[in-house]
Length: 231
Image (cartoon, rainbow, N blue to C red; front, side, top):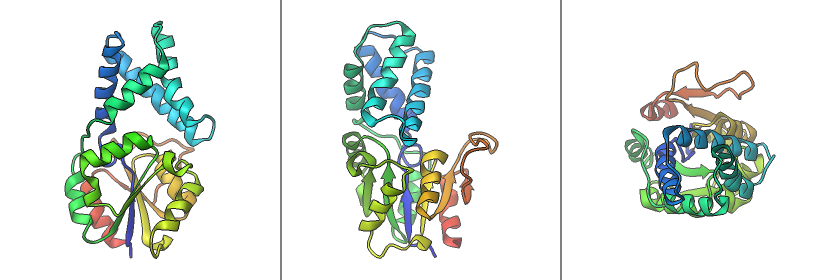
């Protein structure tokens, strides 16, 4: 029986893509760069690549924050300081939140029945402000942010630290829910807990041959209560 559920934050409970687009648009406008659709899309691709390199231990978090802008500005042929762009972007990103469809209803249903914890790879200051803005403290018994912990998902050390402070923790009574195969699902496997992949896209999209295989897959957040109740 499941007692503890670990939830990823971005693109699982909060719509990071929408928040990213808004924050990046404002950042580019302040820097005098037109936020064309192709530019916004290219930044998102570069950003995702940098985070995956961080997950693999190939670059550091400070490098992630700057490289995505350095690479973007190089491709655009503009001379803008990446440091300034990073500061502007994080300040705008921290200002608000957008819930994923069904997220609030899901949390209201699960919170009285399970111990809920957040596990996120985001920047500590930004994530803390977004968590407060969304009022997630009402539903969660705690949250773990990689920058504050000192380890990133999917590393086992990240989860070991989380588990060490969860009262009466039992891996067989725990499941992780997240949208990222490389971060959440691989992290859950590294930690020895069951995994639920939240994948609202088409079944054949988003999974490569080398990716970890989740224990369960859901297309909507509304499927989670029934699934967890059967585990």
